Image (cartoon, rainbow, N blue to C red; front, side, top):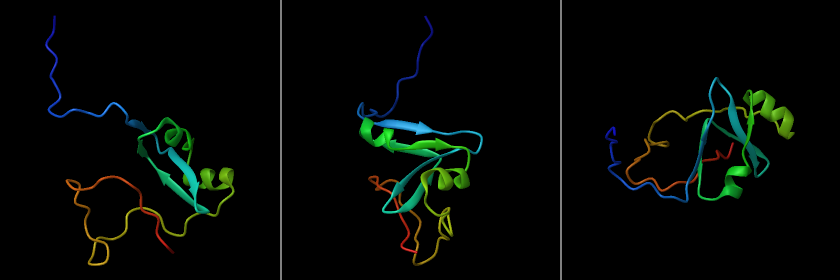
Length: 98
Protein backbone atom coordinates (compact mmCIF):
# COMPACT_ATOMS: atom_id res chain seq x y z
CA UNK A 1 0.00 0.00 0.00
CA UNK A 2 1.48 3.41 -0.96
CA UNK A 3 2.24 5.88 1.78
CA UNK A 4 0.29 9.13 1.78
CA UNK A 5 1.69 12.42 3.10
CA UNK A 6 -0.22 13.79 6.06
CA UNK A 7 -1.14 17.48 6.00
CA UNK A 8 0.85 19.63 8.41
CA UNK A 9 -2.25 21.58 9.46
CA UNK A 10 -5.83 20.56 10.06
CA UNK A 11 -8.15 21.85 7.34
CA UNK A 12 -11.56 22.83 8.75
CA UNK A 13 -14.37 20.58 7.56
CA UNK A 14 -16.89 23.44 7.26
CA UNK A 15 -15.08 25.30 4.45
CA UNK A 16 -16.35 25.35 0.87
CA UNK A 17 -13.84 26.11 -1.92
CA UNK A 18 -14.52 26.66 -5.61
CA UNK A 19 -12.31 27.87 -8.45
CA UNK A 20 -12.52 28.50 -12.18
CA UNK A 21 -10.20 27.78 -15.10
CA UNK A 22 -9.62 29.08 -18.63
CA UNK A 23 -10.39 32.72 -17.81
CA UNK A 24 -13.87 32.05 -16.42
CA UNK A 25 -15.04 34.04 -13.37
CA UNK A 26 -17.28 33.53 -10.37
CA UNK A 27 -19.54 36.54 -9.82
CA UNK A 28 -22.37 37.91 -7.72
CA UNK A 29 -23.91 41.30 -6.96
CA UNK A 30 -23.12 42.93 -3.59
CA UNK A 31 -24.61 46.33 -2.72
CA UNK A 32 -25.44 46.91 -6.39
CA UNK A 33 -21.84 46.29 -7.49
CA UNK A 34 -20.37 43.38 -9.39
CA UNK A 35 -18.06 41.22 -7.28
CA UNK A 36 -15.88 38.78 -9.26
CA UNK A 37 -13.16 36.30 -8.50
CA UNK A 38 -11.40 33.20 -9.79
CA UNK A 39 -11.34 31.48 -6.37
CA UNK A 40 -13.97 31.64 -3.63
CA UNK A 41 -13.86 30.28 -0.09
CA UNK A 42 -16.95 30.39 2.14
CA UNK A 43 -18.06 28.75 5.36
CA UNK A 44 -21.63 27.88 4.29
CA UNK A 45 -23.20 26.07 1.36
CA UNK A 46 -25.66 28.95 0.94
CA UNK A 47 -22.73 31.36 0.63
CA UNK A 48 -21.19 29.18 -2.06
CA UNK A 49 -24.50 28.86 -3.92
CA UNK A 50 -24.71 32.67 -4.21
CA UNK A 51 -21.74 32.65 -6.65
CA UNK A 52 -22.39 31.91 -10.34
CA UNK A 53 -19.84 31.01 -13.02
CA UNK A 54 -19.53 33.08 -16.20
CA UNK A 55 -17.21 33.12 -19.20
CA UNK A 56 -15.94 36.65 -18.55
CA UNK A 57 -16.50 39.76 -16.43
CA UNK A 58 -18.45 41.34 -19.32
CA UNK A 59 -20.75 38.31 -19.56
CA UNK A 60 -21.32 38.38 -15.78
CA UNK A 61 -22.14 42.09 -15.89
CA UNK A 62 -24.67 41.60 -18.70
CA UNK A 63 -26.31 38.53 -17.14
CA UNK A 64 -26.59 40.01 -13.64
CA UNK A 65 -27.80 43.41 -14.90
CA UNK A 66 -25.15 45.55 -13.24
CA UNK A 67 -22.63 47.89 -14.90
CA UNK A 68 -19.08 46.76 -15.63
CA UNK A 69 -16.64 47.91 -12.95
CA UNK A 70 -14.56 50.88 -14.01
CA UNK A 71 -11.48 49.37 -12.38
CA UNK A 72 -10.94 45.79 -11.35
CA UNK A 73 -8.05 43.75 -10.11
CA UNK A 74 -5.71 44.44 -7.26
CA UNK A 75 -4.98 48.02 -6.29
CA UNK A 76 -1.41 49.25 -6.62
CA UNK A 77 0.48 48.54 -3.41
CA UNK A 78 1.40 51.86 -1.81
CA UNK A 79 0.91 53.67 1.52
CA UNK A 80 -2.87 53.82 1.03
CA UNK A 81 -3.08 50.16 -0.08
CA UNK A 82 -0.49 48.19 1.90
CA UNK A 83 0.42 44.58 1.16
CA UNK A 84 -1.90 42.06 2.89
CA UNK A 85 -0.31 40.15 5.76
CA UNK A 86 -1.72 36.70 4.91
CA UNK A 87 -0.53 35.24 8.23
CA UNK A 88 -3.06 37.42 10.09
CA UNK A 89 -5.78 37.65 7.39
CA UNK A 90 -9.09 36.21 8.64
CA UNK A 91 -11.27 36.38 5.54
CA UNK A 92 -13.73 38.82 4.06
CA UNK A 93 -13.67 40.69 0.81
CA UNK A 94 -12.81 44.17 -0.39
CA UNK A 95 -15.24 46.32 -2.35
CA UNK A 96 -13.81 49.69 -3.44
CA UNK A 97 -15.99 52.74 -2.76
CA UNK A 98 -15.44 54.25 -6.22
